[in-house]
Image 1 (cartoon, rainbow, N blue to C red):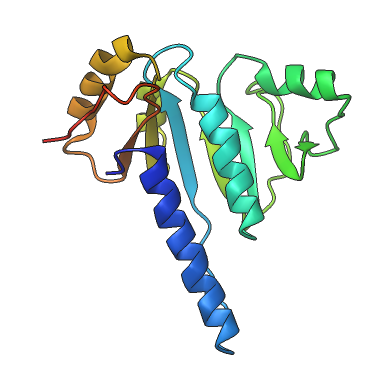
Image 2 (cartoon, rainbow, N blue to C red):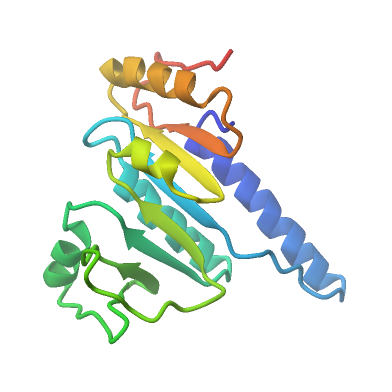
Length: 181
């Protein structure tokens, strides 16, 4: 389990380095199967959407075709698209800074699903639905305020025995630490 965003980033950078090393040595680039990752915050404002979009953008930069999908009713993606003057394409996808984002349209709207994409699902603060989804991994985001540490501890208790669950703490103060025992 990653203890921080920094630790997760270090692992992703190591993976990027290994992939680049394979290519530089004349070997065929390693291809990883597409994965679906659910993200949810443990409390309102914990940063699940920010983390989800950032993670999708990072995967895209690494060369993995990725799409962020809003699985909550916040309307953040359409609000962002309106602010930036972006329009959804025929697949309902808004492209912002090279990152594909699909707003929550509701169950009644169906699009042809592109294959071979990594998917990052943003469940907002509904971590129970994120856990019930059949995703390859679930990332829980704890808030960055010092009083959010109790929510992070509860989140840690919920994932101790769950393989494929990760807790990311965006603690804003150096005095707060979370340990999974």
